[in-house]
Image 1 (cartoon, one colour):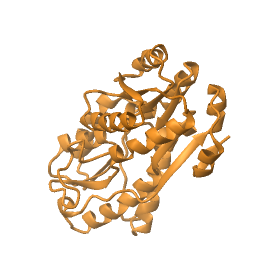
Image 2 (tube, helix red, strand yellow; image 1 turned 180 degrees about the vertical axis):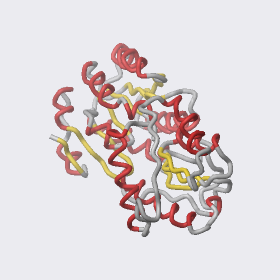
Image 3 (cartoon, helix red, strand yellow; image 1 turned 90 degrees about the vertical axis):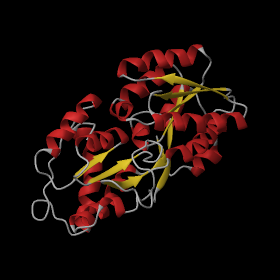
Image 4 (cartoon, helix red, strand yellow; image 1 turned 60 degrees about the vertical axis):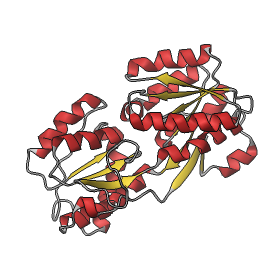
Length: 291
């Protein structure tokens, strides 16, 4: 896990629920050896190697970076991963038959980018300049950037990337957004910003910049809005793959599944802090409104 025990707890609860539903009872038929990177993404490789050499039967991980760390640690041990976009990240070349030793549940987040532009534009009708916070060296993130650019062009919105690689980059990125007249930014998910999501939300509010995210946990931490799949449910869903692999099926022959539950969440407290009035029609579309 790229986060900490506190930040990852809700997702592991989903995994444990899924395992129980599949008849895999922790402490009886399965034992979990959990390792946390504590937000230090560069620690994922050493943690994956530690697990791979400890005799585990299967490695489970969340996020593209964790999945890559597991793949680098072993090309033999089965890997089940919850990922943002396994295809765009290059983790697999085919969803129905991924091949190799990795399968799991994956979003196709770039496909949802246009929807996020639509939602943030509906919230800020005067939006003409939109930033995209991402790590520009990440293939999957740049794919999302291209989709945001395409959606922005269709709505006459100028889209510009804002590079963020470390927590220290967040302040300068939002300062640049303000200076360049960006009233909102799309934050492309990665493990680092997810771990530092409270800090990110505070900086965004301080700079009077609206935000939209892939996952609701950013909004729970003070972000403006999110549209995307339910992560806890994806962890629960992945237990089906684990059960099949432990019964002898090859991970490369198990189709990667896509999430089945999506949610639109708005934080009204944050909207008020930013001086944004969310239209009633948009509030009515939300699955949850945080007040």
